[in-house]
Length: 250
Image (cartoon, rainbow, N blue to C red; front, side):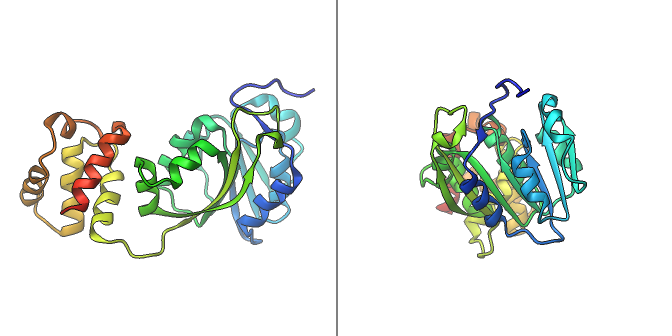
């Protein structure tokens, strides 16, 4: 029995691509791998051959038929990966991620400590990450280094999705950040705060200002009150671009 298609599921059938995903992760015998959305466990089994441990998080319990028979070094958890990944210790992520959780997952990764991630994601979102004029391209630049591993045409999946995909390799950025980039990074990390408070805190942390000096500096940016009162997490692409543009002109 094969579970019916739901929950944004498209199964990678191209063994060549699977091999490139595993190779790109450069798995060592002591690695702990987090896999999101293992489905039938084809990639999971390959990861388990090389890693010390694999923790696979699957939303759909109908896949127990396949995942109950994984090697002994595989632990399977059922539920929402965005919630359960907080309970998992890992140093690498290797996953064919559901398109619907691409952006929420990247928000989580900004605050996670890991060495590398090899992700198969939709080409549309990859274009957003790698473009020059987008909120996410700016965010990614200050946190990570991203490189393309391979393009994956939609015919490589069953059933065929609406869009092509891309395998990417993500590593923590090693190059030193300029002051504007440091401010943007601190600003993004406070996504639960309103823009005014997040900017003020970013100035305090990066320029060692007092709270009063930091608030004065925020006022000097001449941003609309309505924008300053909005939570960082809910900024549109255009709003985020406007704020980052002001920061870069300081």
